[in-house]
Image (cartoon, rainbow, N blue to C red; front, side):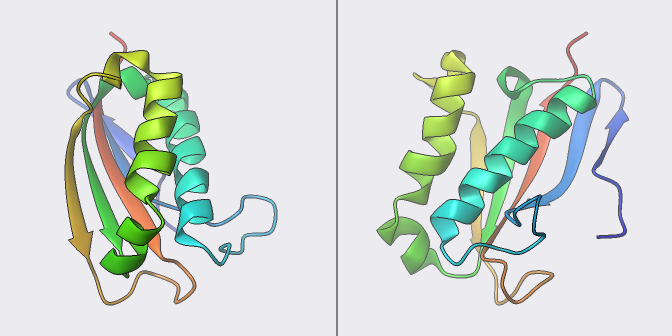
Length: 123
């Protein structure tokens, strides 16, 4: 995609929507769960690249094309919260703020989930 991965402004990191396409193939896996796992790996990498970390996440906005699939596949528990608990143990008790939104489509029809993140820098 032609836009920036994110920006740092006033001690905050704003990630552009992080999608679940596979970095090697640039294709979106068929399941929302697999896409969510890819999103979380990219979020970790991008935050670190921009001087932050998972522990500094203040809010995540999660866009999905199918809420039924999101809840049926337990994407929240297995892919998002599970990843945060593993890599940012401070979220085991209280996860970051989150907004979940169902949308009719994302940038590519094969995409099922996209996540925006705002985090503090490591300073």
